[in-house]
Image 1 (cartoon, helix red, strand yellow):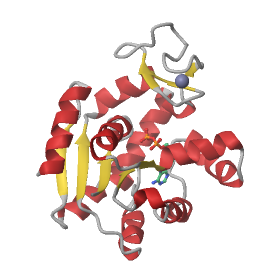
Image 2 (cartoon, protein in one colour):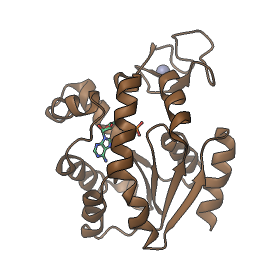
Image 3 (tube, helix red, strand yellow):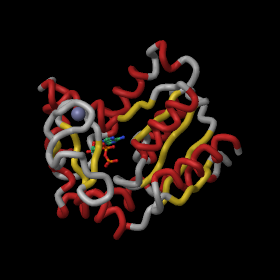
Length: 210
Ligand code: ADP
Ligand code: ZN
């Protein structure tokens, strides 16, 4: 099954991608994670992406399109994949179509903006393994220390409140039109994402069976 997860930053795409990955044994491809990893490694790609990411802007289409095009050729994508954070603009969706990639379902996780701001401002991520926590909703056992690997948990630069507002504005302007784009293909399923993670997972798994 070839899937796309749509939704605002902080809607929980990454968390649900993991749930689907466990369920269907297909890889989750996150352009955000790929870009952050490149940044950490200090590659040319990372350097190119840094200023956009830090400012809450989108990395240019041609850059992310090239990343996904390459990633989709890996053997682990043969039985399907979950796209988390791609496409994020209409030209990116058109590029995916032009590659001849068949999409079986597009799951859009909807969360109101106020809730997103709360979630992202309290989010902390592990510097070493990328595990995600929340100061109120999902604190690590010891403050500042990752439960999984003992690494430091920190706030992502783009989770600062001003940048979050910018990311939401970019989402509404450039990514939300994709709902219409995929509605027209008949593949779109909308799920509510503002309640508990497990509630959303249930809806997401149901959407796979639909
Ligand atoms: P979130 O969904 O929480 O905003 P991501 O980890 O998916 O975070 O993305 C972080 C940043 O990486 C984005 O704000 C953007 O700068 C860049 N990025 C990720 N995916 C894309 C994409 N498909 N197109 C353009 N930029 C992207
Ligand atoms: Zn960790």
